[in-house]
Image (cartoon, rainbow, N blue to C red):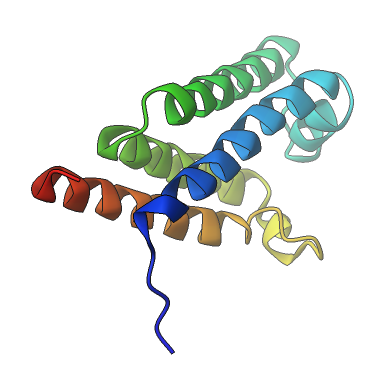
Length: 132
């Protein structure tokens, strides 16, 4: 069985990513001094300046990517989001490798998100080539 992605499906896929990035920013903000800080502390990072910079930097990146995916969708944005997802996954893997074994899969969930970004980037390239 082959799944054929139709152009009408792309806005729903893109919208799901917008929600993921903007909701992640919101949750990080709400949990600024809760779970966000606890995760960094469990990675051995305790300097307030560093932890604040990492949390606020993550929030800023999440908002920027969410808004870019919403307002300026296209291959460059999809590839930028894919690159940032890869970088954040790599950094988290180094700092907190145990998250790969977490039962809710906070890092494993990045794999289908990466696949979705790749599909959207490819679809964006094809639509530009064909003018659709």
